[in-house]
Image 1 (cartoon, rainbow, N blue to C red):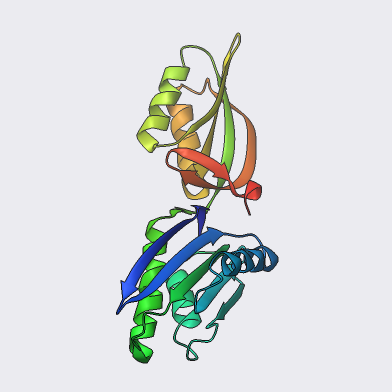
Image 2 (cartoon, helix red, strand yellow; image 1 turned 90 degrees about the vertical axis):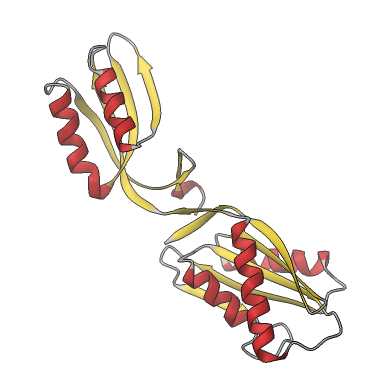
Length: 216
């Protein structure tokens, strides 16, 4: 699954109707409901505030609302966009200001879907990674070799300390952790020690890892 590290918003116009999409990370149905209520208050004069949410580590909870639009023309298409993007812990609200021209069933489905798609483009989306936080101890001769391996594998340095030895911390996806350990051992002639290992779930914000337990 994927998550939003930062939400976003976008607006489209379809036959004079304005569709304002607001997409935000949420951690519970209650938080999603608070978001929807806040946007209803903000856009109090809008005709509709349709919504869709997916919540849970595996996206096990979902709900959507057409908020007065014809059944199946708003909330379900919005939810389908979120599902197709493989997102969880997300809520999308599309606010519609009616422009005086009826769009028909197909037009509404396209407009609400497109609005959420544009809203997602304004968000920061990242993949949930199952992995390990590893701490490696080495001498000053070995640190350059370890940093070279990290660079080649595009792995982050999350901490580093210098005393009489050097300890460097990184996060490694579970499916490459074994090969990474082997390469570090070989590159340092077995002089590097793995002194700590914790199973973690994380996402990358650019090059910076973010622990999912802190945001989910």
